[in-house]
Image 1: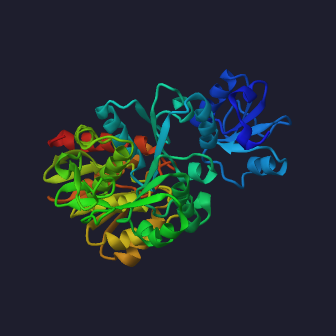
Image 2: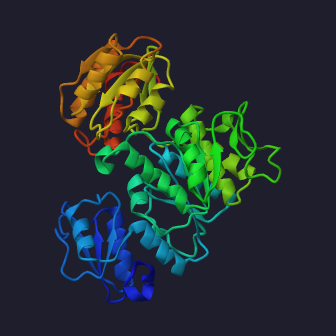
Image 3: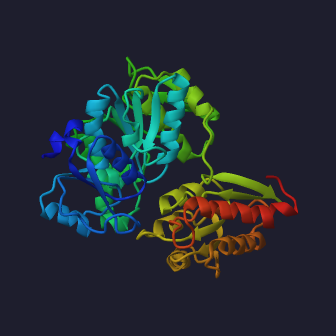
Length: 460
């Protein structure tokens, strides 16, 4: 069997291995089983799954997150076993089950989930039969059905790195900053994985307000057949999408690029923070690329509600605002959060995943008044602060268990903050050293704030 010959009929009786027994792997397992495949699952981290590749394997489907140098992947290659990513497999199944279904996608270091959910809300407002899937909500394979016309897919760098076959109607790249260096091996490889998405799309919207994407623009214009459209927070030239006063306007997907079409007013967005405006711009561009008009775009963005743990204001007490941005799991996201406030008591730390904190600390030095550090890589952040922002007050939390970590951090913040400050949880790190997820980290932070601060008098 070759990768290009994977058909639904060929699945019946096929010895198929799913590499990875997480949410995606289980969805792939159920799909293949329902079409008669003889399915095994390999995952050395999950009880009930095989620890190594079985002797009989005619095709392997690889879940996201598995490194190319993992022993199972190396054995698949050494044995010459045909293999696909979950996205490639889903694309092949889509071509047979729902050939009229169209795919759009986006990626970026930060803002992916918010932006893809914006797209889904816009599709809902327009009456389009579309869903958000991929790295958010339901899996792609579960969304392959003729009843769904559009898939808006959030893709991680892992998923893109493994994929070769899809042809998206349009994609958007939001930003690229150091993240997952431990998986990719270097920032350049991580960047290249993100940029690879452009080669899989007919049309690509690129946020040239982002430093990395702006630097990459010249090479992109000469190295791809995709229709490249820049978007940014400035006034757009012909062929671009941008801002005119407080309006997101399109001068790219219009009949006459000398005239601009207003897509949405910034005033109706759930947040006018610059990164959120960029996210809304990408969502509007993707929506227009699939034929949705400005009225539905405005309605979809105006009724969109940001998820918890994304610059979520918990409350205010004694002139101090408490904000949860636990979703800021890397330096770039934390920087965007800190830039939203003039005077910050910053709660940070966790697993840095190989990222440097120097640029973050340098760029935010005029805004961070004190830092409260938690987690395994607290010393990394302390070292950057001591070198690049030596006047800042630094406190390290001694507790190691989730609830007590946040109680201690909030107590420190309460003593350090003054009227006009914002106490901001924007960790710049992953959470798994002390918490089960960024959501648990944010929930425990919110609980500590409500118990130790707002219960004494304050506005939630």
